[in-house]
Image (cartoon, rainbow, N blue to C red):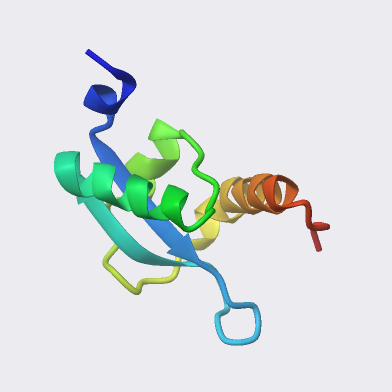
Length: 91
């Protein structure tokens, strides 16, 4: 079995600092939907980070829901990862 077979859940976040108080969930899914979320991200040059514990927490949120304050630090680390992958400075 390949690596894809191990993916059970995926969550996509969006953060627009000029509009949102915090990142929000814009997509989530299990199995085939999770694979599609990851495929679309990669096709669009969006870095993907494997963090099953964070995905577990975020997958309980509704689509378009802001992330809760108790995961800000973890998501901030994720955003720093994304910025570093994009060659941008973190804020």
